Length: 82
Image (cartoon, rainbow, N blue to C red):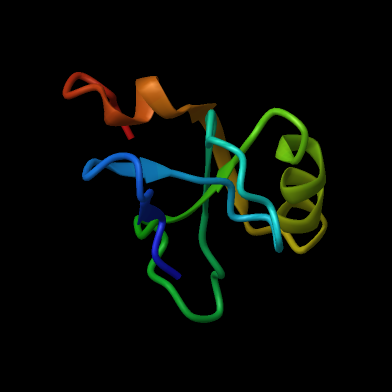
């Protein structure tokens, strides 16, 4: 899944929510991994808007995949400690 999409009015990629059918701007990063497939330190990411953060977090959490939820700004910060 491509986390960034180029919008017609802007040549800059804009992060959008990973929820099916959602076109809203991403605000949150949900870091996860599937322990049956990934090493413990590996982190896959889904992006979420405010409206879908809880739903996507619950989906991953029920499966034991969710590792962290942080703001997109925090995730992109060079000082972010993951």
